[in-house]
Image (cartoon, rainbow, N blue to C red; front, side):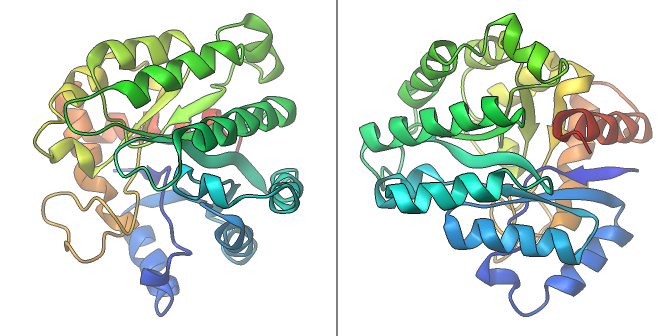
Length: 271
């Protein structure tokens, strides 16, 4: 089965001793391409370093909502410079996290808006993180409101990107109508090992709704281990577990879905 991993933090400390071996194991498992998203300035720089070292790794630069309140103008200018590099395929990871709330909501919203503006300017997709507290949906509702205000529902956005998705919802989590609205806005949607957790049952419904050209899969390594993977450290090679779950939900043969996942990766990131 051909595989991709649209979100794997290979520059995290968890892989500092053996990133080469982890990447090699993923290749043996069928993972052809992966994105190593930045979550702050150092990790964004490291993402580009990984992409320079390994042709199968794509870079992304951005500030996670957890770090939104730590960013000053000088730091943001450096993120912008990194994002302009032609080897960087996406802007982010950014978004909203009202679950842990490590940064005030207003700082997260400002951070999100500036990422969306940069992504639109560069014609690169924004990678979006979105989490609410269990049983709530305020982060999802605020994210959709910001996307609409940024004009992502306008035809000119899709025209500038050649019809490719203006943003990617990474590690989908939320109610079905939220997923439907994101799809109406033209977003791509990626699923992770989170789909196997209690409370995430709506993901199965949304997985069946996503058009094949905007459907992606990920590990969010070293986090969100799917069943069968080590709890202590998820790796890109375990993306196959979630990919086979997607095939089951969509009533497709894994080999057929794998081809579509690779095509959707290329279409989303322009690789």
